[in-house]
Image 1 (cartoon, rainbow, N blue to C red):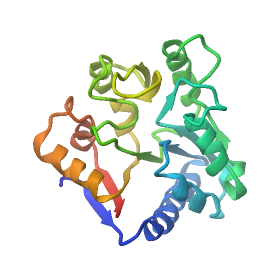
Image 2 (spheres, helix red, strand yellow):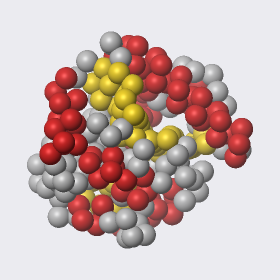
Image 3 (cartoon, rainbow, N blue to C red):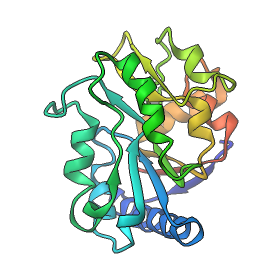
Image 4 (tube, one colour):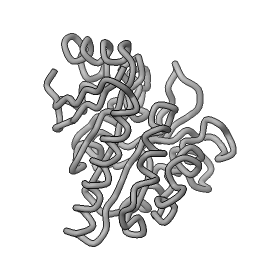
Length: 230
């Protein structure tokens, strides 16, 4: 596949080494620019990674953390990526980091996406570390192949950092970083576990277009490092 691959025998080994690599990249950013930025995905796959990362001793007070996507739900919902990050990453040593939320008090996700662009502009950019996941349909962030907003999300000349999306195959309206915002990042990782998702990725890269499997758009536009374990 046309991306750098780091393959591990177990998820435990992956999370331990990956957390150390993320911490090193963030520390380099702080040393070079005074602050560093970390963009993370939600869902269940990264939770053990979050725990490992939260226990590493770096200058977390100089780190900005935000999300690559969010569901338009209340923070109390189990579907909230904000909740997952606050409860699993921004704890322990990492509790000193500054968290910049995607979702805000606007009436809907479309208005909130515009406001989010202003908040994210306060972060150190390009983002030092950006971690993506991938669904079995080939979506990444909340750029789903079924979304009518996908063309806007993949447009490299749109000038947009964040857009609202409405997948027809998954619940909830969403907010998502756009492709240009994702690929501008200094270090882009794709974090996957399980044989099934690795096969989906291989098939997507070999046979699919960017609109059929949006993860292909990221791989075609940037240097991506795959972190995978069974």
